[in-house]
Length: 201
Image (cartoon, rainbow, N blue to C red; front, side, top):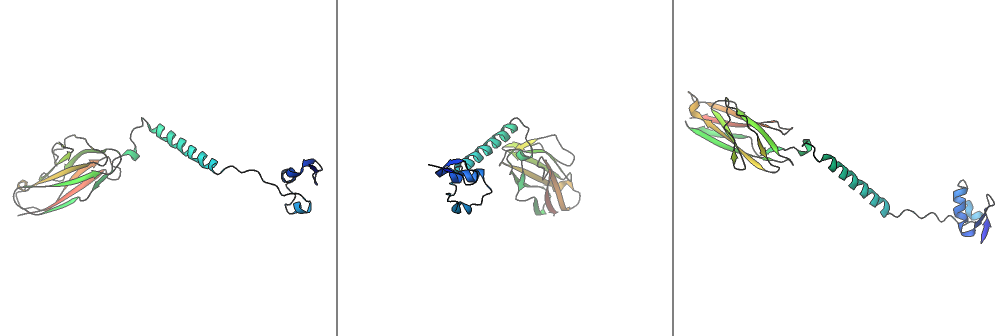
């Protein structure tokens, strides 16, 4: 059954008149529909809720895939770097007799990429150091012997730096601190200082 639109006179199916008025005559207030004996617009069927959710998930997945693909073949950057971590960097030997004493500092790589070690050196000729990574030992490092050496600690792996103190290097009885410096590629700790304290007796 058709009925003429009260605004424009166009013939419209009775059941579609409310929709016609809402689209063609949006300025007519909805409260007048009752006075005009026009059924309120049925409203268009909305987009199902799952459609934007799925569309959003697809967009996120595509963006992540493009980001990952763009990193293939890319040299390791800061996000892939190793991160130095240790539970202690200081050791007090207390009283040291006229001999060689040593202490091992264990440290770890808390990063997602290799932690690269680029050698070490000490603050005095009485102190030397060696680094052990997975059963492979570095050359000996000292104040005057700094051999070229690079080691890699894998992600979540551990290594050991052993500091040696030789009391026979001094003609007197020394009491104080000595340091071993380790060079890493960790941007936050490019140079790590391990300290030992001694009191010769």
